[in-house]
Amino acid sequence: MRINPDPTPDILNAIWQTQTQEQTALEQLSTGKRVNRPSDDPAAAAAEVQNQALEGRIDQYLQSVGSLTAMFQTADSSLNSVVTSLNQAITLGTEAANGTSSTANQQQIAQQVQGILDQVVQLANTSFQGSYIFAGTNTAQAPFVQNAGSVTYNGNSGTNSVTIADGRTLQSNLPGNQIFQKSGADVMGSLQQLVTALQNGDTAGISSATSSLGGALSQISAQRVFYGNALSQLDADQSSLNQQNLNLKAQDNTLVGADAAKAATDLSKAQLANQSALAAAAKIMPLTLLDYLK
Image (spheres, rainbow, N blue to C red):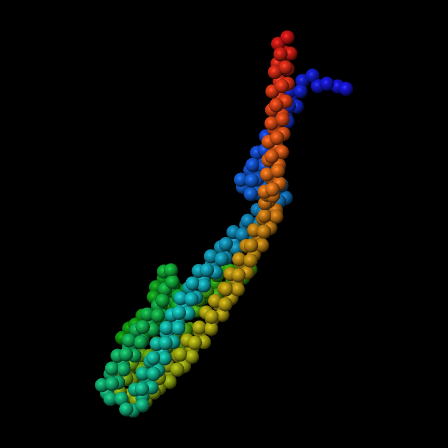
């Protein structure tokens, strides 16, 4: 049987190993992670990096979905108010066209319809977070401007798209001229036509303008379908993205998550082993030093 004449290096190595094991267990318990640096498990660490990159993209997509949802809700609410205003204008036009309204009444109705026109222009200039919703891609300035007896569109016919998932984009706007000034369904023009006919006491003109407003109302209702469909899609996309996030977090936990019970057991074993190594060192190392002094 061979006796190690100098056990000091072995004891020091045992102390170092037990302290390293103790630190590893403590780190796993404090971070909740089994892999705290690439060297702990290179394959798992590499897979986690990929997951984190995907999680970052998903978080960005969720922010885009949230912003688009709020903007579409604002746009749809504005168009809903326009629908209410147009229905009111149609009611007034129908009342004025029945042949029983006096000139004074028609003038009063003209003022009411003018107020409706002003309100509709204001709604058509709705902004969201500093950008005009119905301006096409020219979102920095109000798209509709009232001049003497007419409304001018200063936006454009452009549309924007926003990426809401890997490989998937969603159109994020409708240009205002498509919504409010489409040929044959001109919201602004029909309202102005009704105001002018009422001011002139032109019964035939009132009837014609009121009929045109019906077409304009149908156009607004048709355009609202875009926002309704988009909101439904965004709701589904948000649910899908949130589920992807949950799946990725579960994968992360499987890849690098620590087993708390095992880490606690490892810590207890390492502490016990370290105490034993220190006790051995306390007994053996002084004897070794005395040997050197002889």
